[in-house]
Length: 105
Image (cartoon, rainbow, N blue to C red; front, side):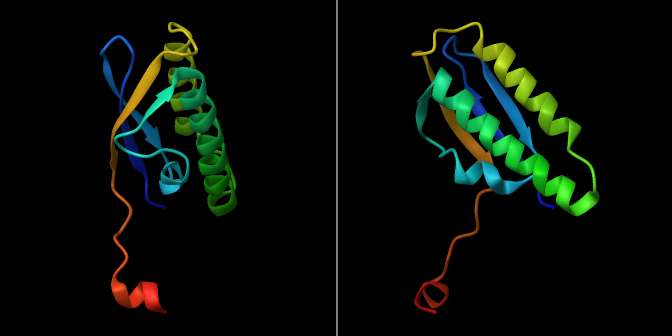
């Protein structure tokens, strides 16, 4: 199962990496996009819950690192106003690029 890291800049300028055990974060966040703190937290919680369920389905247990990542996000988010902005700087690894032959099939 491919894991990934989402790098964000919090409203106070701190840069942090957020871990996910699955590439599902790409379904909920976009690099180069800023989100309100409350929206970023909600999207992250949804994505990390999906990621943890994927781990459970494959290995029979939830991902504790995913839960810890969400706890860090929520704890950090609590220090800011809901309307402050969090910027998604990078998501690694990126999703593979689709080729024209894949798009036409």
